[in-house]
Image (cartoon, rainbow, N blue to C red):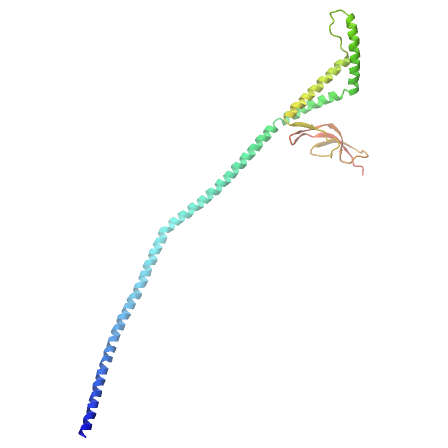
Length: 259
């Protein structure tokens, strides 16, 4: 009985010792955990409080840099807008200058070509008078004048041999003087027209053409059978052009429509 009791006592003592040894590290672990937890918590708190401060500092620095660079960007944008405006104005001025040069050259050419417009229109009355003077003498009268002048010249030559030696030139008839006058007027008209041709002044006769109110001036209308209505049947005065411009409209008669 004593040995059994001793064994039981030994077992209970060993169990109590083992329970004590096991309980000590647990208490030490439990006692050490709150300290480490508090340390970690404090580090996290200090870290969390330091991060907003750093972010705030970064934001403030970025705002300061933006504020410093903002006036420069505004000035740059203003200068770019000014360059665009000045470039547009320069292009408009160049276009206006080119148009001014073209208009000046065109006006100069027109002034040179049509400078004698008024003077030429005044000379046309003289041309008309010379033309009427030439038309007043028919061709039959000129041919009769030629034959009579030749006959009188032959008779004058025969009689001049019998006359005194002082009469060297035979006398001329009135027909001969008229023929010479006609020739002189014709030469004057031709020379005047040639002078007008040098300055691009040319006559035109629209007989048989379609009536054009821009180039023709209708003096009368007459129904003519077999003629197309609206055509020019007679030209009283020829028209004149100076280059491509009408200097004077032709005075014409127009076929009347009988329908």
